[in-house]
Length: 451
Image 1 (cartoon, one colour):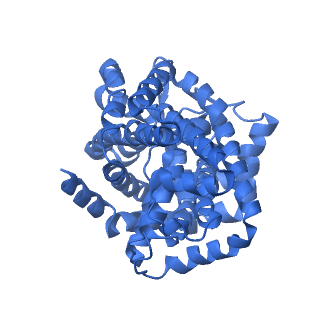
Image 2 (image 1 turned 60 degrees about the vertical axis):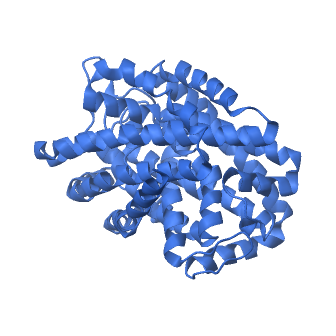
């Protein structure tokens, strides 16, 4: 079984998947005139600026505010991919994986913009007043009824992917971190996290939005501040860290210490897969959350999609990568992997406090992902099976954490690669086919906003 999943993960994350990730990003980046790069100040002003000035979510239809939507989406994306996944990418693919993670993220900002825009454009409002949208809806409504089988296939894969990602890898990583840090038994961690998850998610989308809005900003600030402390003390290692990132990105490397060596393809794959797993650009997951936001134009919410990738990867993932590479030049090939490598990075400066920093970050990241990802899970269940099936699937959402803690770290992350790969392929094909629709919406919006 393990051998099969390893083979499947390698097939999914071979050239076909990597090609789709970069193709989508390049098509939409070039087609919009490198919008996410040239207009980054505008994106930040219209998202974070509006949140600070309390201008967001004032007009338009929707269930939750734009910031609650991006917080809930970030709750689903800022998970242990940012903390343990990045460390795994470096341990297996070398420092060069960080470069490809950045490239995938810059392109992914535009891909996520497109996904969110189409999700809001094609969303549906139920008789109860609830909003649902995402890949299933823009595949069926945008491409036509003959594509409905693909929409259903995506919905089914999303259900499996959510079970394999949010409530599989997250509680597993959290349980490992708390056991290594404080000796807490994994099953205790799982039980507590499942109870909290059930209380929040079964309270509906608005409760999830409020929970995410309260936790995510704190988590980001907490993690970034302690990371900056390491950069400040070890500033002399910063140039070498960037030299390793860029140097290893384009060269194969022989084994060093605990590092098994990596080809350029392996480095690229590890960076792109971990980056995509973390920010989910191209997977079609977060747009299901954004489809519920109060907004008066699809592209206005699309800006929050671009912001989401920026915060998730260019900020959070980069913090983890630089902590590992800057805290001690030889740490990345020490043989440590996953969350253990990240803990070692923080502990070089903070000692026992470093363990606490990672434990708190991992716990909050895992918990918010288990909760935030329920948006995508519920939307997919409703689309494929209808609302009557929710009671059964709600209970199913709480089962994987109890299984995951009995599996190895390597197997858990293999499951992640499989689930994200299966989700991404049909979604990115749909995005490319719907590109004329997006560009029409985008150009009309730019003319209207004079952007």
